[in-house]
Image (cartoon, rainbow, N blue to C red):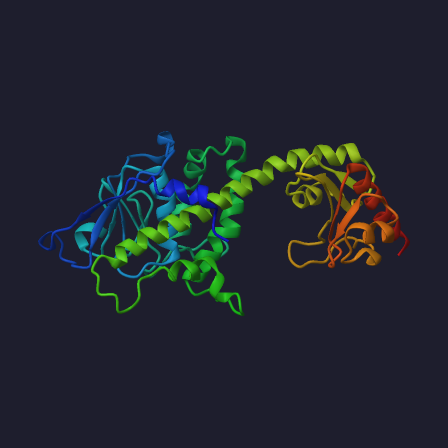
Length: 355
């Protein structure tokens, strides 16, 4: 699901200037336009990012996820720079006033050119290929996180986790090393971003450029949301770890609010925990703990006799006043009060231990 209206609204506040390049100035007539982006809150860590470029240069024509996502990072760090989409030699040749990515036929971080299409293209330490996104993230990701107000103590961890979970799949897909299959193949982020391209028979000469920047705004919401989620998980780890210490060898973990809990439970080696209880807006939630990152197997199911019941029917089946809901899949339940939620958890533990 796309980010909510608040996230999209901030992009309506972008200052986006369009400058049509005169045909005589470029040898490549496909170099359609220069757009200037000034994202809100784009403070930069200038001590690390070096000379400020005037231009961010990527290829013209059809766009893909890797240069879009690279543009997300670079426009955050260099909001004054203009995006140039061109294949003209005078634009894709390194210079002090530009960063070039996904075009140019070279990778040289000192010269600030980050392409991956050439012979001898760069590989990760494990031999997996980079796309332009991976290269840009490698060299500018830490500064992007600092500019996004990620605490310094968390930057290294978030940089590594985002690279493994978000950047690498894009790199592999762009290089043909990963081919999503099955009914969800068309719903991967690279596939969805490419659906924003103009139709093949759209004769508007500016359609490609407009589509690129529309897709860029969408790509930005996903990157920002993923980074925010990673940062939230690290904040949650501290709270969950403290709750685990307080719980001791008990089977029920009580948290002060809903939050990501499994990573901290796994990291703490708290294999004895079976259920988690926490308050919601108007009631309390009882949830199971998944065994692994993938799949739906849990450490212990809620009682089979509760499955799909609500209200008085669940109160009768459980013998607990205030029990209000149990999902038919037996992985989450709700109660009207803390006392009822804890009683349900205790009953679920007893049944699980007796099985």
